[in-house]
Image 1 (cartoon, rainbow, N blue to C red):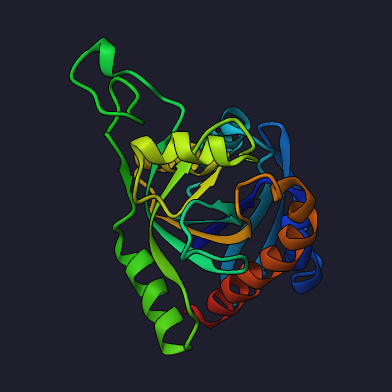
Image 2: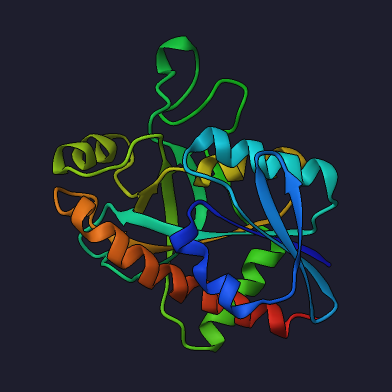
Length: 231
C-alpha cells in the first residue's frame, strides 16, 4: 500500500522525522516528500505549506505522480466550541470552506464553491477502521465538521462570524478542505486527524507555537503507531 502523510508546518512534522529514518527524498509540486518503507508499505511524508492553494497544489502533484492508496492529513486546528479544548483530537467527518460565500451566485450554501459539494464528506472504510483503532486503544477523540479558510483565527469576533454559518463546526484551520477537495476529485480516501492547539480567540497567537508542537506530536504518534500495525 502507498500511504501519504501530509502536514502544513515543520513544527507539526517534527515527530515523523524522529520516528522514521533513512528515507529518500523526492520533489512533488513545491515540496519535498520523504519516502520510507514501513511494514511493507510505501510511506510518503511531506510538508504542504500553509494555506489552501499550497495544500491543494502539493497534494495534487503527489497524487498525479504516485498512485497513493490512502492519505493521512494531520496537524493542528483552533477550537470553535466551548467543549473542544486544547490538546483534544478531532477526527474530521467533513470539511467546508468558511470563507466561501456564494449564495448570491445560485443555489449554493455557505461554504460551497460552485461546481463542488456543499461539504466534503469523509466516509471511507479506511476512516472507519482508523476510528475503530482509536476506540480500541482508548484514545479520546471527537468527530465532526472542521472548516477551512486562508486566515489565522485569533479573535472572538472572527470565531463568532464563522459560527453564524457553521454553528456545529468543531475546529478551524487553513488547509483541510483543500486536501479534502483534492482527495475527492482523485477518488482517494482521506483520514484527517487535527489536534487543538488554541481556542481561536485573542490568546491564539501566544498559544499556537507551544501547543502546535506538543499536540502535533500527539497526533503523529497515533498515526505512526497505526501505520506500523497495518498489514
